Image (cartoon, rainbow, N blue to C red; front, side, top):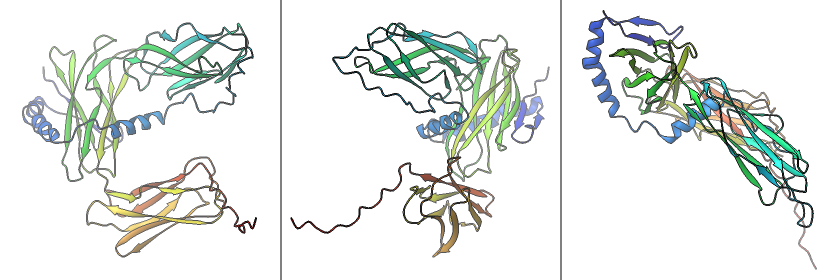
Length: 397
């Protein structure tokens, strides 16, 4: 029987090419070690900055349980007044087993064992939905149930949700409601993600291998369904006795203008979860960046503001800028070249107030194929500029 590993390349539909056994043996004998040797020259593959960026990117697609601020006054009653008493019998509760992608449900019982009115507010992180209001009031001897749903789409095999509680109980001003649950997955990957670390712009292709074995759904029959971005390739090599696989992931130029956050989607052959995804990260040295990396402005300022950033290229090949634009029509942006420097200027009118829909972004368009666009965020400080005090004559007293 001839085994044919499947090569999937990023692009529309993730086009697939089947290789013959001879090509497979050639890759295993020479190509993979060579690529692995090249990859070994890269810096450590798990820098904290990349992990934080990946978490932020994933959380941006998830619901957060603490979007609305609390409106409760949690000042404890005077010492000589009847006092509330916050009681949670089990602050750590187990959750039922769920398949990855399903909601995992947790609940805690809260009792006011005091003589005064208990007020408390709930706060949870992203991927956690609090069922019901976050602000709650309990009369003496009353009991309430705190319930949450946890989105397990981007979770591992164990989840540990946390709900923070602030109360007006002077003896228990803070509490933590914790849970622990199991997330079922069709396979276990080692490592769990592909992280190429930092890649310089003059680097060649890099590759990494992942060993995959069955987990909770019985035997697996893996196939590469899709890869993203377009310069990512992936293929599977079955490992005797054909119950485990080696996934080879290859990233090649042309490099984007910044980090790669991609994925390899696998058909699993498991009914409960037909597809699962392995994330791919790389920190690509940018071809074009702004110095500083953002505009910072204050809202509702008394005077107009002009602020600028300088464009910086990774080498002496400075490309021509085709145009600049800003997403907020209240703002104006222009571009000029000055003494071999490329300057982008933002003009903010007096009393400017953001529309609240999304943070403004300045987009720079260039003729460079490696960096056709650059987005420069506009950070609007939350506090308005305080008015300047009026000048007064010195006192003569």
